[in-house]
Length: 265
Image (cartoon, rainbow, N blue to C red; front, side, top):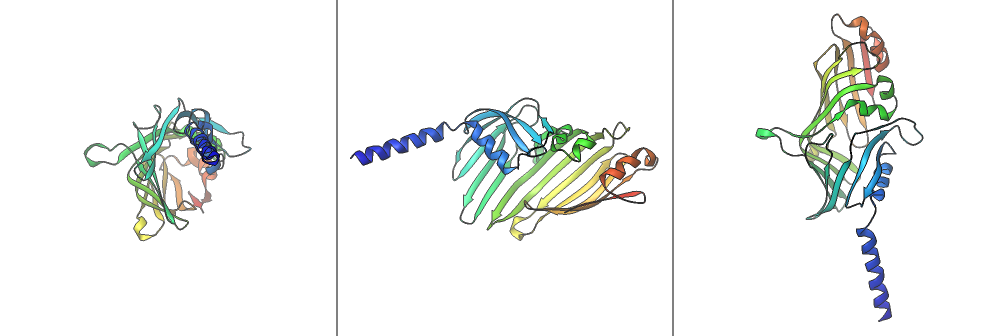
């Protein structure tokens, strides 16, 4: 009888501890998963309902850091067989963002569900200031970008199948009215990155970069998986902007005449 009472008391204490788990536990998990590059600073509340200030850093030991204005608020709970995270951030998220994690045998699934767009258009996840990227350190702290980063998509799913990560859906990342501290131009340009994948085919997601407008012309393509990014592209100056963009082209890639070659992975 005493054993049952002790077991019940232990279980009750464990459940109480879980229910009141501080938000700092979630902040620690996010920091560990991102190698200290994304921090939930000044975390308040619990794992299940809390808030924090999102901060980008250059990683452990880095002095670079950049915080977003305002606080990110979240609620975490069960939704059928999934763990659902609902987040709001007045500065940057478009309404409430829903993220669902569904575990399974040898696989897990993370689904991002932004609020739907009008007339079947991809839902907008949010819009962030490009200056936030400076917190990541090199090369962003040198470039000191400004402008905005808008993310939209539909059916965005990341699946882990026997240790391999696959992306499903289509995401559009628009870099609008971008500028840099190392350029005297009022605006470098606006660009579109499209990430598209089909998890059923078991292949890495494709990535395409194109220029919408501007003096700095960027193009390229590549592949992305959760483990690795491969990208090959080039940068060049529009006619009449060669001299003013010469220094920037030397920094962002390997010069081959008038073109700067960009290679990642």
